[in-house]
Image (cartoon, rainbow, N blue to C red; front, side, top):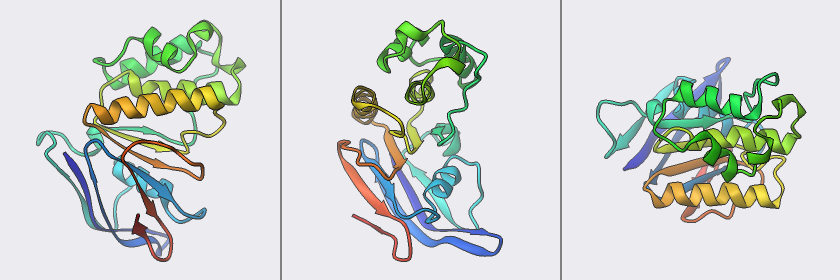
Length: 204
């Protein structure tokens, strides 16, 4: 499986966010998006997720199921955690599992993977910023998706939570998936390439 971007462009109010952007990501690899604020990192993730249209260019998936679009194969975790504060940790996870479809890990296992098992009955409103981020990330384990799109995934995470995130990403890559993340922080993930967005976008 290979995700290919061919000369992608996005305009906002007639102003180009990026133009002529091309890259490819193989299954088992991760792509780290870097660049200054406003360079288009979040925009690119949202485009791949099917939440924004491209002004020009195309997005292709070689070797994926022909009956499903790229966006249908994606988990998108934005910089907002999308957590309902009045629901418990477990209730939030169950909501996402029902919404995303089953076939992934059990709720209890997904929460345990991100160190949230002891907090499952606590209303999400009482969680710290880092705990809320872990809860948002746990949903990538609740339903199978080949492509993970993560916007600042390590924001507010402590070392243990960063290790849990790295373990989840490593497992996803080993299973033949691919992960694309926008970040200002170092992410020591395996098989990682860096796409620098800005005036002279390039893959390193």
